[in-house]
Amino acid sequence: MSIKIVFHERYYNSDYSSDPAAYEGRLEGIMKIIERKPELYEIITPEPAGEEDILRAHSRDHYEYIRRDTLLYELSALAAGGAIMAAEKAYDGDTAFAVIRPPGHHASADLCWGFCCFNNMSISLLRLYSEKKIKKAFILDFDLHTGDGNINILENRKDGFTVSILNPASQDRGDYLREAEAYMKGLSGVDIFAASAGFDQGVEDWGGLLYPEDYEELGRLMKVYSEKHCMGRRYAILEGGYNHGMIGVNVDSFCEGFA
Image 1 (cartoon, helix red, strand yellow):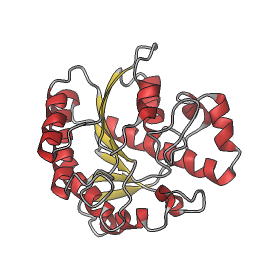
Image 2 (tube, one colour):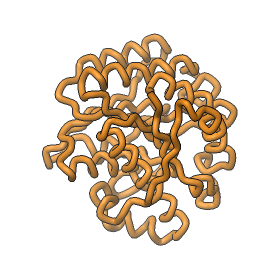
Image 3 (spheres, one colour):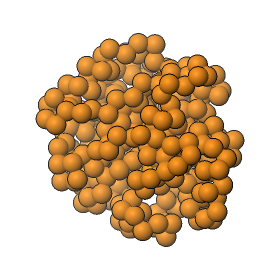
Image 4 (cartoon, rainbow, N blue to C red):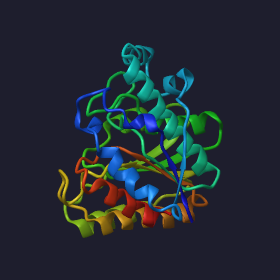
């Protein structure tokens, strides 16, 4: 099965920020591998998210704050649009991975930090919920740093939308995978699986824990349990990962299991 890779050439632009998520070469390392594997990957191009989509997750003040910087807003809206496209493709039955930036899982309704601007995950899931396609979602957040923005926006909602989020805490790689599987095995009534896919937990990145084969196993587990719980509906959104020599390898490994 092939994977839809949501990507736009504008994501290569590094002028919007000086943070590590914006460094030149980060996305190039991913796309170089993806472009060499047309049998596994199909690249599709997103449109920017609209104001209505963004305001489902964010306050008007936060929206206007990001919009003051023209380039930052352009790329942030395009990243959110990429996440929406991945979610819509997943709901329709196509496995999708959004190679986007800026990342989003540290963006809350009223503020952001950690290289994030808009919460791409929340915007994408709330789009599906607004269309009455889903009522309950699961997010596996395997970034080194827990996505507080995902939690703040999506947990404990009062509108009937339910989201379960796991950021595994285990510091042993075997236990980490077992923790993820045990959680997925115990889910029920979920309509879609999503991954906040950060690769800074990699053995050659900040976290120093997970090997490429571990990312492949995380992808495989999401495939197996999404097929069990929600007809295989699953997508992933790029978050962290800063070793330019390894991020492409780790993304590819995850996708090999995820496909």
